[in-house]
Image 1 (tube, rainbow, N blue to C red):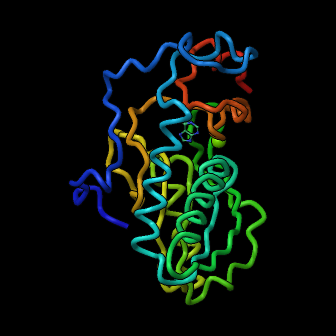
Image 2 (tube, rainbow, N blue to C red; image 1 turned 120 degrees about the vertical axis):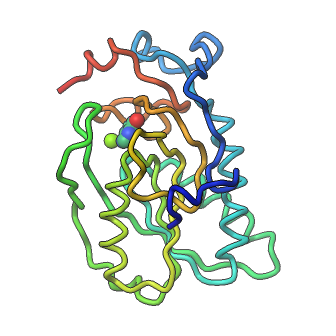
Length: 225
Ligand code: HPA
Ligand code: MG
């Protein structure tokens, strides 16, 4: 894990989406009719996510591709990114001179209620991860907000003594305070706004949206618990 201050090159910070980027109008894309009025804009279209994921897979293969990989998918928000990233890594592995054995495991975390991070992070169904000992582990996360979730998870995983741990985060939020933890592979750096879609939820809604979108104020009210 790199320190935030060491983040200088594009490859580690990902595609930077600036604070003044208005996003794409929803009228330009298809999205489920049941979310009409619940979104402000499309911030990252599905196709762009897929293209960036393809490149991340190549970077990961360049770094880890000569050893077995244990992928640890952080549920639920990371499932779509993990599935697509694993597909791309498999495709690259098929086309390389030696194929890479890859295992995929799942860990479930919960830290958000409405659009707020709660203090207590729950590792749900925390299984025995002792099989990680001596392995190269790739943690795959949909979004890194405060970085605290990732910090807690890293400590948890480190306790099982893997050989190496790398973290891939599709999105990293540009928050005011410096992040507790920054992924090694970042898809996009985004403004500090609440985003949904591509498996990222607001109280379990919006996982069935393909694009990454900014939720509207009325959307937040409608699905508040
Ligand atoms: N959207 C969904 N889940 C999240 C977010 C977000 O913007 N930030 C942290 N978890
Ligand atoms: Mg969530």
